[in-house]
Length: 433
Image (cartoon, rainbow, N blue to C red; front, side, top):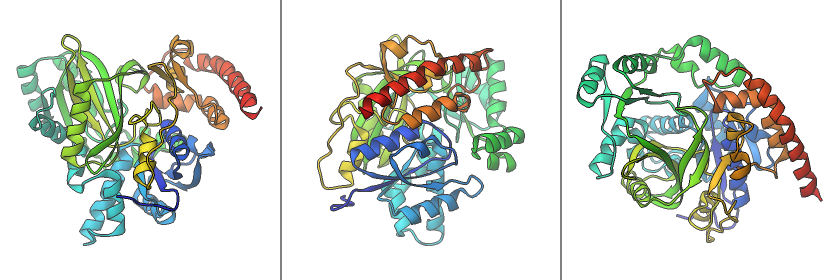
């Protein structure tokens, strides 16, 4: 389906948190040939880039109204969700239109064009339902069960043993994942994951980080649905794709080399080719009729090399801006499908297959050897974005290394920011010259 022939297509990036990769994605989309608008919290790093035409405020206390106002003003051809809560907002907007008796409205059409078939919304939102569907499709998955209560957890452990992985629906970035190595740890993790967010934490996040994602769940005392999954010993891997009407148009597959914390974001990734991962992603995208950006997480079993699908992320992920040539450039695929020209992928970002993500790996360890040996993905063309990240390293550390409380981290980051600032100035002089 061609959206725009004579003009550049307009993409609205929607995000509810100050997640740095969203800034990288708007840059890549603009470079690919899209007009990019954004709806995001105040203080988001994408606001300092030159890639965004208009920025609309996201207000966590009125989330759907914020999204509706941005859509009405931008008239986008596509909405790109950059986090799980943004996807939930879009799905809820679609549901409200349905309840009003407007299933054929322009807003519904836009959301379905951006996310895919509305029939898949509940499946991608519920971890248990997604895993059940994958198993029925013959895809290799670890045993998974929705837990109604602690007795169900005890019964699971009696059958399956430990370690076990507990995951809460409606969470992301490792916040809602716990690996339990004993029955006692499993019960403690279940209680914590099921409990509503603490009000004090929600207020702090809202006031200091301009992030209201925890506010309503805390006020309404929302209890998460928790799933338990068999532990697969091996290496973590991830796929990120752009798909259209159930077909994968571009995709990247990575193995995780380093992480901010045991259950946190990846900070160093290695580009790989894995036939089983590719096949599983294509089958799930086709089965669910997905459109837009989407991520899939896997565990590659240490002994066999088998890929176990463990999760779906119905949104753009932190590597979606990277280009590695034809069929491996997601922003180019976006521009291509929204216009009448053949996608022209950007030049490959590097010949290296290992990528150190900025600022993620720098925040994890300012002295990391990967900052030198791998391709360090610093956006040199946007010096204001680099300066913003360096000057706000404490907040960024909260996003990428949440839960890490090592003494001296702040001092180490402050010291490490000096060479990064110097490098930024040097690169800026080179670009101007």
